Image (cartoon, rainbow, N blue to C red; front, side, top):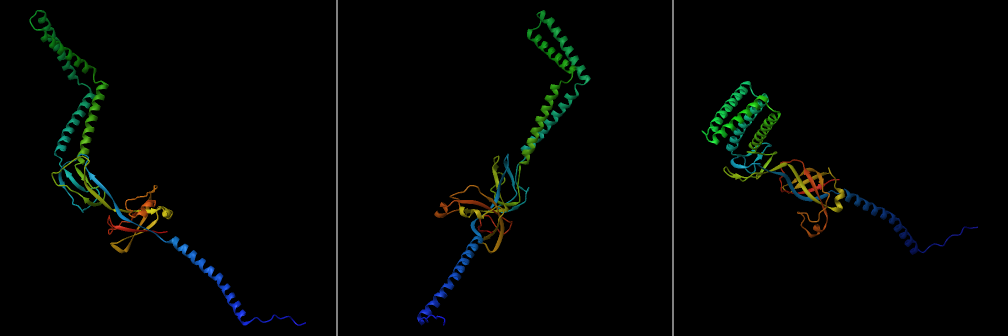
Length: 328
């Protein structure tokens, strides 16, 4: 029996079926392409650096004197570079030097008194004190006889009696030797004198104001003869080796920031230069109105302060506007 054969399709129908089959073949290819592009976009967006802006800041220090005084010399000018320990301003020292000399004499006297007290009285001192006490007692008795005869006033006798009593007490005290209480009192007097001298010496060091670290004199407005009060700042010093930028990271992007994260810094003054840094601080408390946020939308967003330390570079100056790229 001959096999059954389907009747041929009309020419128009055959062409329509071929077109539909071709369209169906493109659908999975299109899905694959769109999906790949989407995931590529997601991946690229995740690796894109976080770009932030801020101003370069530097650590600064206000220096002054604990005691103040009259300025004798201003040794640096604004803009000058200084080294740690370098004198900046000096004060007159005449009065302080006189006080130190006087106090050294007090210390020497207190030390000598302590040595005498520890050693105790010498034998000749005891003999001399006994002779003084005996003479005072004889004088008292003589005046007592005259008083009984009505030849002298009562006050004259009373004075002699008091002198005799005092001389006797002094003799007995020397005969007993130095008491432990006397030694302790002499030690306390010496300690107090030495503490006073140490205080004056510390004050004398405050007559020279020194730079606490390497830096640049930002402000200094003094001249010889000016009077400066205690604890009053005399100069402001910037430390250019300690530069950083404070940036504000929106809350949704905070998860992309971590301590130690590398940063690339650019400034308008050197558009072709890139400077290095890293994240050294992330604030725990969010803010809504940080000082350098201007737009209303930004002020409505919660942000977190992030401090980016910049590697030392002589080109960078405090106050420069900077762009920060946080990588990875």
